[in-house]
Image 1 (cartoon, rainbow, N blue to C red):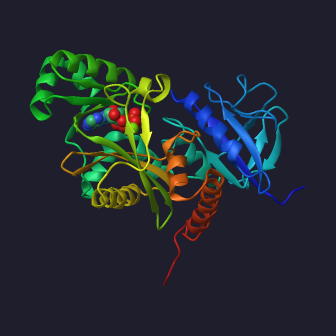
Image 2 (cartoon, rainbow, N blue to C red):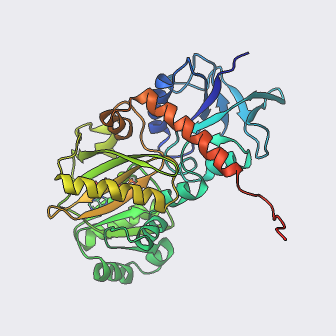
Image 3 (cartoon, rainbow, N blue to C red):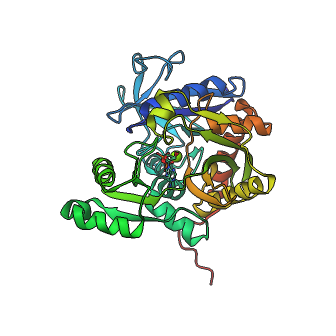
Length: 366
Ligand SMILES: Nc1ncnc2c1ncn2[C@@H]1O[C@H](COP(=O)(O)OP(=O)(O)O)[C@@H](O)[C@H]1O
Ligand SMILES: [Mg+2]
């Protein structure tokens, strides 16, 4: 037996970003300190099954599920114990879960909801922060309520668009104009996002976005602008990292530029005047707190040539590959990859204790 903390990395997931998660979690597994933790890798297949990988397996292997055992985490407080479905027996207890899942069904509060019901500690935002961070429409409403600057936008339901594309296009052109960005409300990695410069492109962009979600966000383009990212770490007193800048290889930072063409540049630190950088870092912490984020998040901005700053979005489970911005920004700020993971685990345990202080049931104070 061991008295090491058992940490289970959840990878894969039922989203279009399954493959991105394999890369992120492989880097996380390679950097978790084996002297401090007993590390487990649990893969979520595209059909939703959970598989506990053998010690030598994990997301690095092409067919990672081979030799793995089917497990479940049941939505009952069971001290974090996994349940072996093949044998119908309780398995090992996990102290901290680390969901390294991107996109819907992983980063959006669904897996976090299961972890809450199971009563276990886990890294990152809870149900609310995750759900708000994944929904670009609600996220922007929260930003506006908190007085955080964001590009002018509107949301249209897919049904409305389908019933009257002509009238809907006219409405969008009057409210937003060109160039604009059209996005499915909840996805990631730029999937389903396009820029439109005229009515023909708008119609194509709306049709594409409508394939992915029943609500569509249309927003004014912030261009010309720099894309600046800030890593945030903490619970009650989150800290902002040094800033990074993305120079997309294509017209904008689309799926190809992110994962296929490999011609985008990451510049650390971002090329900003000190006062602008200070403003971005302060806004990053305010964004983190506005959505009730925990542990970690990457907050992305557009900085205009006049120094004005617009918040684009918050990512509650940012990319974690060796070349991803989140670990790189902490490295540049003085916290290496392994140290960052140690801190995230500490923060998960700390927040779990904090939640434990709240009464679950009515307590009569009279
Ligand atoms: N309003 C905008 N102005 C300028 N560029 C934008 C705007 N919205 C999105 N983009 C471009 O599209 C990319 C993806 O959009 P984003 O909203 O960040 O989606 P995702 O959640 O998929 O990353 C951004 O990184 C940026 O390059
Ligand atoms: Mg983005």
